[in-house]
Length: 189
Length: 284
Image (cartoon, rainbow over all chains, first blue to last red):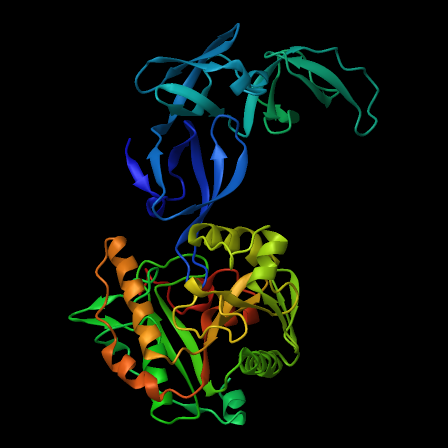
């Protein structure tokens, strides 16, 4: 951690703004006419994931935030927290449920995800775009119903309900898109 | 570009890039080269030529400003700068109109260009918006009456510039005096300087003034700038003595610098200045 001038801001750096870590998502140097150097930033609030614009002057100081991206292995969820293990330090780290969004729909035990760790606490996790999940409950396919596009809901091991083609059965593994929550394909075991 | 200047009766000149000093400016850091400085602009030498008796001169040259790097800034860039005998900003407006519409017609065969999904029409006339009016409308305060340098720069970048030159070049003119070190005050409104900036689609393209020719006022402004540079912890360049000595002979004249790289960005639909340079600064 250190204090830096606006002139030292860089894309990808995390700084504290009102004590909240923000990632500099984009940065442009601008200098109007005879004016001073200004730094136009797109900032991402790492707690809320909100993106917004701010312009800073040379001479404004920032405290850099000790934010690292780490591999976190999911252990379990309870009451208010999701519990992970840092794969390098084996430390157990807890993420507030409200910071996890809908991640629980896709997380299963021992899955490894990328997490941003700030001051020893995970503040967000980044799921892979696709995960493989087991079908926990499915009505058997109805023979003879082959109408194109026909689908049925099934419940995955995480509790997520997905619309799938009729031929999918309980116990099969499916590839799910975590961005949309949609079925992609059946995975052969 | 040269055809337009030739048609307007301008003489092309060259002035040195390696200099003993440059105009002290609070926010411009010159590049050192041995015991000398690289030109931050050809302004002082071109004005000395005007003082020596030229009528209309222009040049295309490299200028250098340390640490300027962004989507529209490179530390080594190409300036088109010209001076002519005249005593109002109107002369610069008509030159800009002739130059930009002439270049667009010559280069593209039509007066309008497509830039980043927008159409920009370079045909005259270009609207002139006073700084005071633009700030009152878009930022809600009068920078001429209550000048505040920090607030001025921030609001200019965030609120004023994005509204300027939409669809057609537009001129922001009559800056507060502290924003125009080498410009002459307005004869009817001494709180503003006869300075203009040309904008196209929110991008600053050219900066010009009716030139200050009073050596005493000029020296005082240089000394203020040098003091401001010291306050920022830098060493100011030596006072430009040769320029100050020539100033009494400067005729009523106007001068303007235009960023050639940015003009080429507009003509080639480029969003980033690196796209129009043969080498990016870190590659050469």
